[in-house]
Image 1 (tube, rainbow, N blue to C red):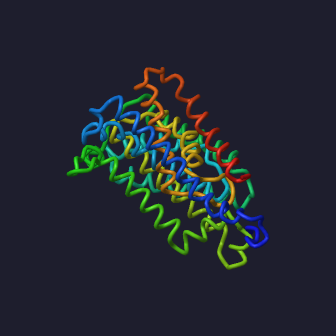
Image 2 (image 1 turned 180 degrees about the vertical axis):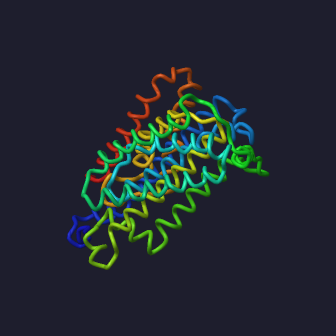
Image 3 (image 1 turned 60 degrees about the vertical axis):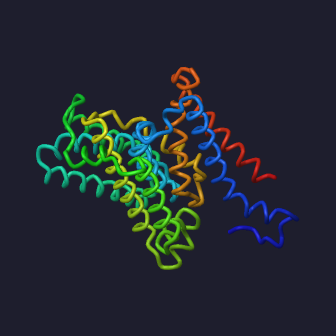
Length: 320
């Protein structure tokens, strides 16, 4: 429970109230600076086609981060979301193309397996890191069985969607804005969303209020699985093929995106809008390095540096 504001030293209540806004303002400012650098160096990107091309891969990435956000909201960490996205991409590239009914059934089973994984973690009180890491090998093995080498195709419906050209605003911006808005409304503005976040903030109080912690965890893991499926479908549509390792990059970048976007590892403190912002920061790091003539081999190091700086600035803000 937060401390009584009246018992805080002078100025501390105002700082405590300003911290959530600071955690969102910081990544927004960083993202604006990144866009500023990109548009200054490459003015041609500031166009419908340029922005669409720049943010094309942000669509699957943001749903990977949303999946991770659902898990972090209950103080867990998912080390299997990357291979899971690879698996769903392989299902889309094979079963959905050849036998759509079987493909849809496989995707539904994958979401169900994710929900059951959350239930197992809760009932057996297992560390989420260990369970999701073990599950990652299962997802990878299934993906390799479906598609031993890159190939397959993309269902026409998915390929047609990712190639849409809406008027005025590029498709990636609409998808990112829609994901942020829907996530914010469902998780931050509804009673059920408050309960789900409360599992990470004060599980005992949620249980005493009559809510099932097991069902809540299973629901959030199921939503994470659904987001992973969407990410895999979008990735297959963009690449027009499947690959058993294509999603590996999303495991760690999704964790970084949630934290950079204002989330915390404990306390149920997450932000869908911040997660989308953090995803864009992680995604655009390589573009900024490329445009300023720095080898993209430094990308992982820079991403790690960004994460350390953000966490350090938060620590300073808390102690101020």
